[in-house]
Image 1: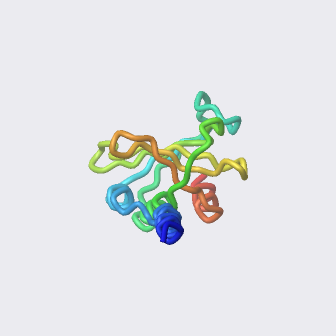
Image 2: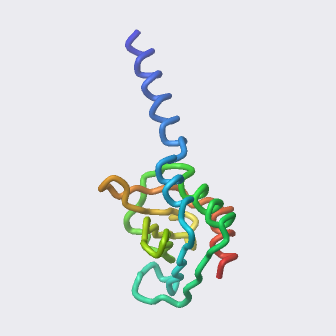
Length: 133
């Protein structure tokens, strides 16, 4: 019986990480624009090399879906390749940093409910972010 509870707990823990983050998805999908900052690529935030503004609602929704897909534990030594700033009526509603140039460090990171969270940055999300550039 003891092993059954352990197994059941393990299954719930694994499936909990795979659940989409619906509150985040709803908040950022409601944005009317996104500012994408691309950094120099060395993992630091100090050099913005390009900025793009996205106003296409379909692209914003697709980006929101990618960002909210799969929660992961982030390696805080990875650095950043850029940031996303979601706006609604000229106010920032969510900031999201991303790392996509290192196959071992492909994350979105953001603050949610006062806590730093991370989700997996998939190859499809990388392609979408690169297409904005």
